[in-house]
Length: 151
Image 1 (tube, rainbow, N blue to C red):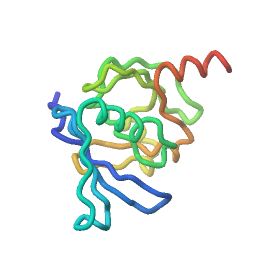
Image 2: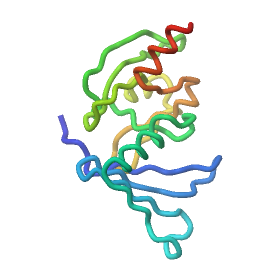
Image 3: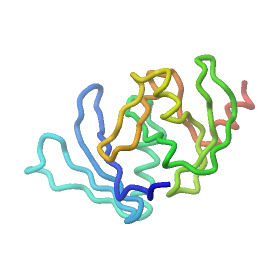
């Protein structure tokens, strides 16, 4: 198993327009954000510790799904299959190697086989999934359990 990457790159979108880019370092527990078009005008924003963790939770896991989410099998532990979706993809409970938070979502390698248009490789080489293209939403385990009770 490869070690976790030193950083994960991400983009922040406003509709189709990329307005900022950033890097998250799980080992340093930092987030650095740069404006896409004004690097020379705006100094980077740097978040550390809890602020970095909260930002990553928001940007990576609670957005509408338009931003492709890091969903590479190599970055996940404690993977447990929950069910098969109507489109044939598996839905899994898992946690990321750098977190104790449990999530429910798909595995990028599985998605790539049947829906390659919904998968892209990030700058760091790990696969990301555009959940919006799958009509699925990634959520925390607690959200998923609460959702199952209401359906």
